[in-house]
Image (cartoon, rainbow, N blue to C red; front, side, top):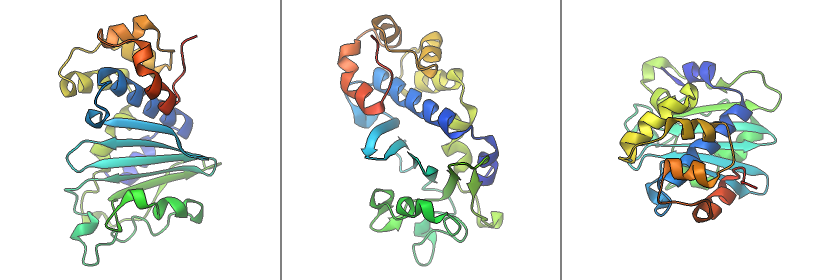
Length: 220
């Protein structure tokens, strides 16, 4: 399944943003002391007018999603993909991946943090301008190969707490309370009881910086 298929399965941007914040918050609760070991991140203060959701599996595969008033822009990088820019003759994105990205997202296309040695780290790209009713992606020849979008964005297209809980149980090598995950997916404030259900060694006070960075609702 390619970026074109993912585009048909993604939720609207507000729902996508909530999923990203929820997964980032859950990762922070499960792994509070070593942020570099978390897979999902969310920076509500990435720039004055933009928020950034991210995924890094530590094995060279990433995604980045920029939320702004102009719309939502997302890229994925599967380092084993046939569309890895490093596999191209000029170390440039393959034809169609970025060619038709609207001008309103040009700053995202040129964003230095989405590049390595000035090579764009992208095998799949999707976007949705404010006012659009559907996600869009470039016209990429499927014969070029797999762009990695299917597995890179699978937790975002699936969007169920159970899928996150199953993944987190394996990733963090710890039991994960499904009801507590459901509460975080519903963006319920992090009470002591909710945090304890996910990680008995953590308190809400311990998570203050992460809550602020993610922009997650605070408990009163």
